[in-house]
Length: 398
Image (cartoon, rainbow, N blue to C red; front, side, top):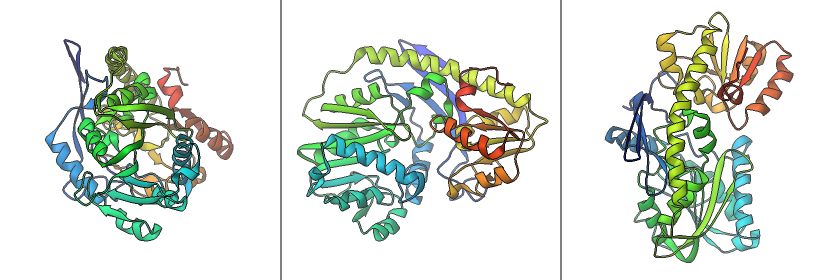
């Protein structure tokens, strides 16, 4: 990994990372998609936003992945963890609007609506809804939830109206040019209309040096402050932010004027410094993980929430092959599937309990402690369990 600093410009070349767009039936991408692509990041000096440097190959691959129906975002579903994400975001929407009654009759557009589940919830509250989604899975969702969805990218000629509210949940981080995207949203908002968004909160990962957040689908890596600056550059007024009560997102609501607002320049300076620290801590974290795994080469090792180690593991395994390694996840869609570049099938929690191992690394920052408590009760001390926070706080885990 290399870093260049010139007149406060930060550039970090993180090397080739797996091109991940969802669980696979084999340990490689089909459909002509690459298994890995280069990944580099920088800091936008106008806002402090950490962003992935443009790569034409990446843009081409992403366009195809979105059409196929990328499964990385679109977490909202009518059951399980997906429902809890939807419940939390809907609660924020109602809080911002003071009460659910303000949804009655409101014209709402959801950009990147996935299967349309959130739309169905808003429609149930009396809103007049429309969704737009490039993935083919939206067609099945439109039928299942009885909501209107345009199968296209935003902006689209098929979106001809203006809306009281535009929602974009886990969308803005996927946009190559967020400022231009926000300008298009402004055109689709009725006078006084509001934008309500959610993006992953990357601040804890940046502070910890955790490169698991790096994924080619995400062009931007927002913190609360850099999100506010980005919105203000697009002319946002009355920006109200909040942290998700479930999951790890930053929520924001705003209206727009015709002029950009003053950004927080201290935030920009701090973001550049944080990016430098991110790179240093990332290399330190990789070395800690290498040492931890090397000490356990003769043991059976498991990774729970395996996508979080996907960026690190291939380069570690080049220098020290790891036998008896297993992956686990609670998402049933991942069971018996693979990640690109890693020939290890993903197992269920039930399999872990039925066939325990010596050491388990839980790589979820948000849910790690909860998963650990549950598994400690189920495994009855048979397995040494180490969480993300224990690894990335540089504890001497033994």
